[in-house]
Length: 364
Length: 164
Image (cartoon, rainbow over all chains, first blue to last red; front, side, top):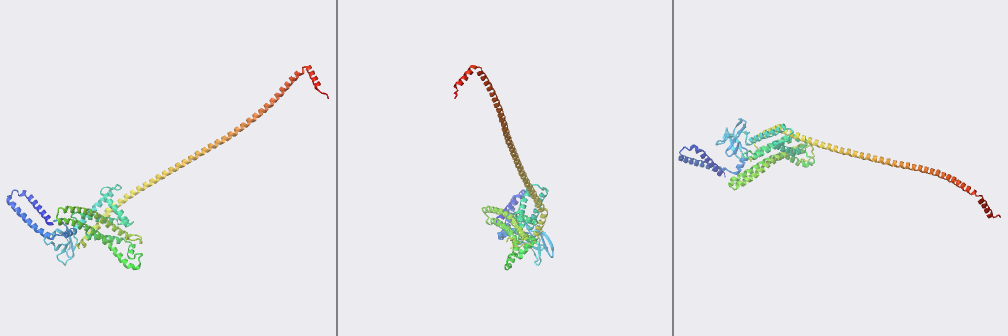
């Protein structure tokens, strides 16, 4: 699988080297040179074949997929082309340490007493196992998140400046495109679900929607990070929603939780634990839903591309590419739908927690 | 299972970055955008309300006008009817008066005629009497002039008379 591709690249590279070197060596004796080049090429090929055999033994599609959806300490754009990212470590004895991840590019993947372990996911572990370290590195996901944050802030402050500068004018250009989405979130998602006091939660929910959306879409770009398919990210978002819900919940909500009206006393023994589990299930489902949808999409796409390498056929490749294209469109849809659903459910949870009358059924 | 193990470093950065984004966007993006949207909606709503109000006013004006026209028409009809009644009444009264007057005139004419007739008749009577007297006088005068005839007559009369 890898073999052919690599052989192709190697030959192309060598051919390119020869071609580019020709004019420079034109004045040298050609016969002697030709022999030398042939020898060099042979040596290179031997080396590469040796390496390829090594790779062949190691390659499996599952590993490739896991490598692509997992976080990393460097941003790999394609095989061998990667951007080193800063590693930030905190340990009690050494304090904060920061260095570039490219420092791990040595035979033992070791630097300053730390070891970069390539397992299912990358991890930095101290060589001295007694030490405890906290990894606050700007990983690929963090870098991607920072980029998305910058894009979000630039885009929406730009849109905001339109409203400031051209008051009372008809919307046009990019602002009107964003306006449609903002209005949709406000009027179709937040207003009906949160209730009359929706304005307080609108900034959070709008940010939530656009943050998830932009990261979902960015995750579909080739060579990009799989941010919203990372459980740490969805966990944080879900927990934030949980906190927003429970900080703003009124007495009715808590009363309903601990003493549901209209339930006979013996049933309370069952009902109260169920209600309490329900409280935690809501953010949990939010977390898993986003994570699973995005990760599943990535796994499907990567599996399809992996199939090309497994079959190694010129007939299969276009078919799979077409299918992957189709799935990519579906993934774009999923990117929107998941952002929408996360926002919708967050609004519903907030809405049910701040609802005024207690006799209403809280949607369970 | 590394996929399902959240990485604390990522959680930390996620919290920091996301909360910063929420804060910055709330302050510098959502607030002006939502305010702009709301202002515009209010403007549009206001314009629509105004249009609705104007339309209602127009309709009101129109119905007022129609009512005025209807009233004016009714009054005109009333006036016309009254005038016609008045004229009819006047004509009828005049006719009655004229008839009465005519009757009176006819009566007085008849009276005059009767009087004239009576006067004429009495005059004629007088004339006839006078004429008769004159004629009788003339006849008598002529008869008495012939004495022989008279005496003969007396003799005839005396002879025919039977003395019983």
